[in-house]
Image (tube, rainbow, N blue to C red):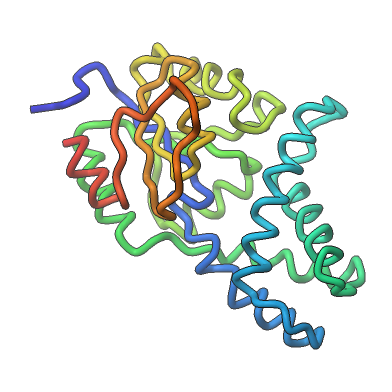
Length: 231
């Protein structure tokens, strides 16, 4: 029996939900820090960078000076984290390192779960990334033909700006309640729920959820659990 009979589309966060950011980037970080003679733990550096990247995204949206794009705010976060750890790098070295983002890999169970879910739902990427970047990652890294790829560039603001979720539903010709957001980022689940989406929290990182009335409809550990819960 379908637990969500009104849901017609699953909208997936990409970074950290489908793609394993830490697993993909930490080896590159380790090599970079080693070359710089830094003793900073690569996993700790990544945690700092990821936290700073989110601040950069929020600042970018709040300041309203023009949408910078995902890769640019990630670069700014990297530069900040280098400074936080007293690691010197030239602008060219930073640009070269950022190419590591082109090599992101999905979590191992993702594709098999998508194969199950596609029998019932339209599968859509709803991501903070730029359109060309998302197309590359979907085709060459995830290697899955999604029904649609929706970039926040269409709205000009990062998630969880409400316009992102509303515009994505509109682009699918669906009511917001006919969409279910799938994300490992709790702020993303909360943002979608606040706009009327159903939502699944893929708690890959065993983190607490937001202190909010907008709770996920279902919480799972990975995409295998997601498919089990939605089919």
